[in-house]
Image (cartoon, rainbow over all chains, first blue to last red; front, side, top):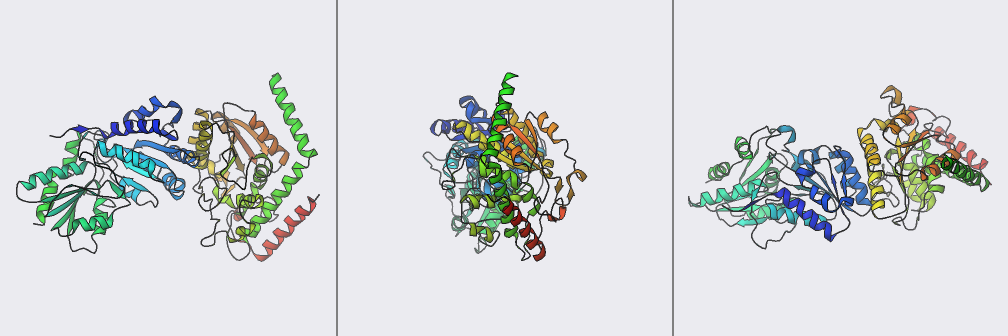
Length: 309
Length: 299
């Protein structure tokens, strides 16, 4: 059983580390700092932290004003509020203007299991990906989250980073370096390729391990960059495979399933997906039972792989 | 109270100087020129333009660009500059006129506005147009952006001030009030919000939709220092801007009572000139009237 760590904590800590290195980094929050972990930055650099209250649209546009004045502004809230509520603000001044505003959608997907559908973003990757000039990052573990935060500062223009609420197993190999737009092969295989991000990358690895015992060889590829989506690299990774399967804690519309289908549009490799079936979430007492309810499990991935064999 | 008296005397003195040195007349001339440029940008070839809201704020724009703001047209990114933001971005053509008159880009660019590939877009575009601080056009967002700029300048110890012009119809947008709360909470005193209260919006009177009156009481309730003026009297505009400089620890809101379409007889107080095309007859009448105003203001 590999070690697990919190993506949220990794995010908050990396922001602080960056804050020491770069005096132009500022952080904005909409009253969820204790959860998004932006409060760590508040403790270290109170003069560069702006509590904007429960006003996400104002937060984003204020960040835009800071960004045009030379700052790199990190905005924080739950994914559903960070991406959804200020969608127009992100689209207009920030994205049309290619500004250095980095939006962190915390507790994304179904990971805020208790709060229910209002707090569970099933469509955030889709809506953010649809915006031109946007970069969308979906790290699969704590280390990859740190790398994404760092990369976000280097990227010129708006960035959306999706982090999960609950601890996730460490997946990145020792010494792995982040490269924007590059899918990472976490496990080699020759029968089927599984593309995944976030929570589902871990599930894909578990599925591959189980299938190996049955003599089925599965390649597992992690997609940390959902935009710019690596269409060519994905098509290349699927070459020679019997099938491709995608897995995401997100609706199949506009996310990994849709993008992969697009990538394989000229390929002869068939594909299928594991994803939320165009429905909202709901409350549960734990994250795993919710993932199970919505079919986001290693078993679901195993079944999809077997369908093509 | 002695302090208040000193401030009052200072402002009075400045006002006299503006008259003595011909400042008021010079700004009136710039405002008339801006209105003329706006009419010419719209033209009479069937292209539509936001005539009404550009004319109602032309005097404010002229006072800011012609006198109040510290700027360097040759260096639009000069870090100590004052910043202007049209939250009511559809009136952008008035700002384009001011920028052209000050030399931010060649005046010829004005006549290309909204053409495919043009430097000047339908709403302010930071990437394409020198002198534009941020993209606006989606209403209600400008004051937040202005707050952000003001906060950044404070962090960097820059002396500049931010001037944000909003519409009165725009006061319906909830985000305006989020930004109003934020400016007060963060004590943003290097920012002035100016409401161009021309009483009309796209499809009719503001008061027939959400009557956003009383504006002065609302802004004061949100913790702002409030000044009410006639938005077409240059002396009052300048005096209000000077008064704003004396206010510390809180932002200032200037409620400017204006006339939509001001300066063009057939357009004044008409909803129909919010965003419209001009007939050849209207175009020529407008130019004639504005040329007459300019002639009267000749030295």
